[in-house]
Amino acid sequence: DVKVTQSSRYLVKRTGEKVFLECVQDMDHENMFWYRQDPGLGLRLIYFSYDVKMKEKGDIPEGYSVSREKKERFSLILESASTNQTSMYLCASSLGQASTDTQYFGPGTRLTVL
Amino acid sequence: AQKITQTQPGMFVQEKEAVTLDCTYDTSDPSYGLFWYKQPSSGEMIFLIYQGSYDQQNATEGRYSLNFQKARKSANLVISASQLGDSAMYFCAMREGRGNTPLVFGKGTRLSVIA
Image (cartoon, rainbow over all chains, first blue to last red; front, side, top):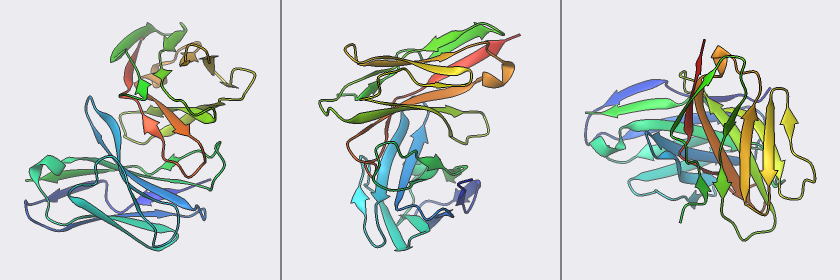
């Protein structure tokens, strides 16, 4: 079974703090993704990566950066957290380049910025 | 413009009845895939079913089936014999082109199954 883990289920941070959200997958997947989920807006793509040290901006990259130093790990960084970044963050991974490849999700991190 | 539209924010269904969750999509790419996910209150996204644009038959997975109408650009999820455990958010998603392209999600439909 594919396993995608995220470092925290719940996180509370203060405005201006630097925040790291970690995601690890154990199935040697090439592609990894970060989404945020807000009520009524569905899932919106922040960043994705299709190889180590590669990253691509998604639809809402402002205020975020990412790091992928190893294939299994994809980190989302909030350089200076703001209250409008309070959200559910979901990490996902997929195997390769086949159009049928499913994205598998982690359990999510619910981040509150005070 | 939205690529995935789910027009039903919320739906109710009686236990053991069938229910259809609507999804329409917009793409000019001839190669695409459509996915449905379930998100229970625990928050985890669970993959349910996949339909490829070149698939000749509607996809089925247990109690889940996909009513794929390519000309209408719709990919509705049908859940047969609803169970209380089916109460969740359901998301339709699309991938255009190759597998390293991210999925684009609709806003979801909240399904509530009533005993």
